[in-house]
Length: 262
Length: 262
Image (cartoon, rainbow over all chains, first blue to last red; front, top):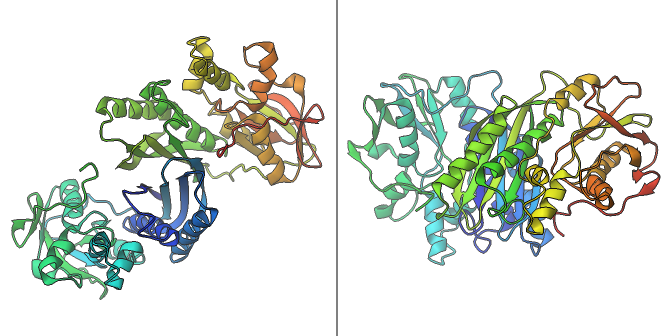
């Protein structure tokens, strides 16, 4: 069994005026189910703690749980329990459990010099959608939809584990920042190839920045021994070297992702 | 594996002026570890989501986690992970996992007419302590300590499972209210013997009310087949009959426990 937990707060992780409750539920489930997939496991169960003001419409709560349920259904998981309390703001605490099917979990600490770095999923879509919403825009619809409802490549997690991934995580805070966790935990340097990074469909001037720093698309990024045969949904974006930190074409990318206390 | 989750909010589940952070940690861990024990499992791991204002002193957070750690140590469990976010009020979301050692979990739905109802632990202590704090008192010290730091009888959970418990839970909201969950889930009536209920050391006029409705001492209450041999820490307080609801000496006790949305 693997387990992961996240806490989402109104105003910080979601806005009730930016996302309907169904999408908030989908997203809250997605980010935890994705964490489970990133350990190489199949998600099985969600536990949901909900804090809500007494004036919260029951229909809002029902739509939230509909979203949680439907996202779980994508991977054969279900909401198995939780807790409900009164609070001033809406706060959602989600815990996901997963089944490793007897395999060891894929952690962040197994990357070795010589490994390749491969990506499965989208980068910068959700961040571009959030920027559009911040400007008061309702377009582009596909980017705004990506912000409201991420589409993590769940099956790619266990697939990567079976293929021999040495380290893996899902990109929740930004590619460079999250790969920094693998670099630190593994004691290695991650070298990204700028030209190999898939870009979101935004203004070309913003695209690389969004791809390197945008979170919440929950792409999976993993390291594999060289010569590992990977399915076509995986794209090689870099390699692991001796050293420390993360570089893009040899340079440090200094604009970090999300700092929780900034 | 069994799992349980709870969300604790400042002002509602704890007050920073009533309890030091170490005790808040002990209590937050205790109520979840106790839930695991009540399923007949040995607690193994805690996941902790913490929301806190940026001005929260680091020493406060460290003491909170010291308390979480030390309560876990009582049962050989540990804090294995979590999440930290910025919030206006302190909110703590705790998930506990436990190991059934191959046994089926003890649920709320297995009580059968003819079973005995047995209790392990204290009733009404924490509620009496909270009443004292509400009055601005600092005495009686043992009751206030019971409010700040419950002492659930953890080993009694797996012990009851091995002994053949048909249903079990820990008393977190009040004996009558919580036994109502077993009555409803099992489709039975729970008949309590008033004279058998252990009373807290308070004014005799309040004692039975506190024992029947006070939560947060996390006593374990379980149903067992008649003639089950139980250790001396278990006290028979009633029996299971056909019907519905919970009665004390044949009468319904109408003052419920804690209503989360009252």
